Length: 164
Image (cartoon, rainbow, N blue to C red; front, side, top):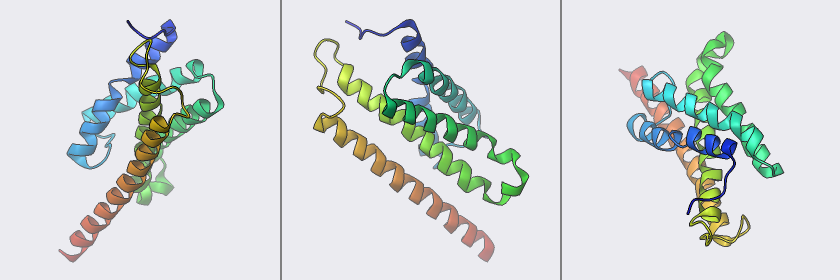
């Protein structure tokens, strides 16, 4: 039995779902979500579908805030390369923004999965369930750790290149 979703809810879910594995693949392959790659462009398309449709699907203030953060971080990550005064900081801004966008994808995905599936008898009773809160905090910790590692890795590569 499938969870009850509106047609727009299904569009939102199915439209953004490919971004989950694509983002993970990019993080594993490149250490970041690189919008210059073919997969990076696909990630942006699926994330924009999800972020824009989320505005019409989400009904709670916290969910709306996550949707807004998603749209803002995606827009920043996708466009910073076109802003000449920020060219020096492009890699860092792009990396942080697109990592935040992935966080805003995982946070509701984990929450919705735990509170809706299996249909009729979900794993978690609601968003305040300790299991949900634990997963949300884990995703937040992974974001902070991941961005820190991405920036440190970039710094090491730049230092090594300057010494070469």
